[in-house]
Amino acid sequence: MLRHIVLLQVADHVNPDQVETLIDQLAKAAMSVPGMVAFCGGKKKAGSGLSQGFTHGFNIDFVDEQARDAYLAELDGDRVGSRLSEITVGGLGGILVMNIDIDDIQTPDKNPDKKPQLRWV
Image: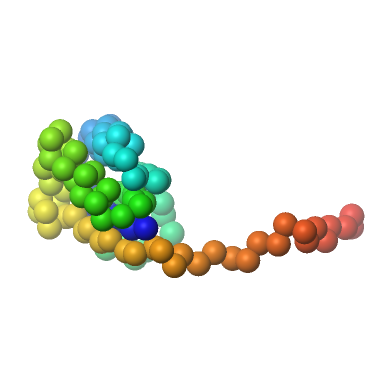
C-alpha cells in the first residue's frame, strides 16, 4: 500500500471556503478512483509548532502506485491539481508531496480478551 501525503502553505489572502471546497474536490477525485482506500484532510491543528508555514494537508491511502497515478490523472482532468498551486505561497513551492510505502504498517497489539481494570474510588 502507498500513503500519498500532501502539505500546503495556503496564502493568507485565500478565502477559507475556497480551500475547503478544493479539499472536498480532492476527496471526490480520490473516491472516484479504484484502489483508493482512505482519504483525510483539512486545516492543521495547533500543537507542535513545527508546521514550517504549512497550513493544510491531506493524505490518501492507495493499494498501489497505479491507483495513485490514476488519481493524479483524475486531478489533471478537473484542473484541481493546478488550482492547488494557485492558492499556495510560491505556487508549487508551497506544496510538499511525499509517498510512503505502508505495507509494513505497525499498530499496537490489541488483545480483545483483556478487560480494562476499572474500580470505583
